[in-house]
Length: 256
Image (cartoon, rainbow, N blue to C red; front, side, top):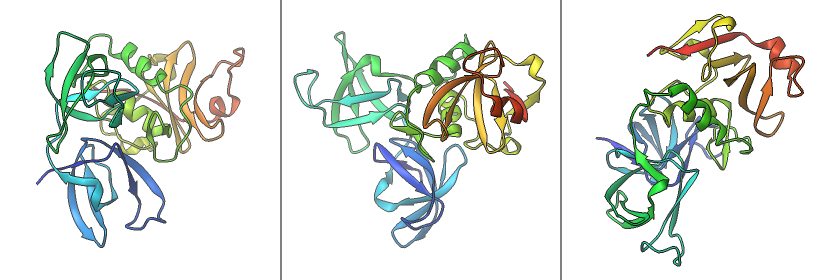
């Protein structure tokens, strides 16, 4: 039986304990499989193959929907009118059911509990793989997070970590990559020479990951800087990061 995340953001823990380290975040509408039950927690396997523990009240039965929140945040309103207060705000990456897109600026959204809300139609799109200009779209998505605070285990515009940034950039464009900075666990990426690198390729450092933007620039979420930022591997660039230049281990590209 499939379950989905029923909160805007739900914390995923390493162990079934609120004092356990955080490993990930579930975003509204993402699906998972329940593996076991321990007190107030479920052990789950998220649809992208990442396991952890979540509070039981953050899940409910349901199927992952075909529309995705594409803006940083989508306010869900009680009527198609901005004069009313938002009842729920969903982050980028949330999966929702869109019943109808009106000729006006709004669309009708139905959440898993069958409650109807309204949001601006620019906030959503049909979820599918992007084949045209994939590389440009990958870096455009990643750049939406520039300035987002660094948050261990995070993957929303409220806070995101290094592998959360790369995962979400690919996920928002229809591709699933491993949600970690360990290259050995990526089953759809292959190592390439730096000379062959292209926009959207991944850069692996010890315990860290970033995305290549072109012209020796890369974007990453780093605890040392405290947010998503852009650096360079070119010693002549003012954004040069010597430590990342020195410690670059692997360059990898998506196998499509």
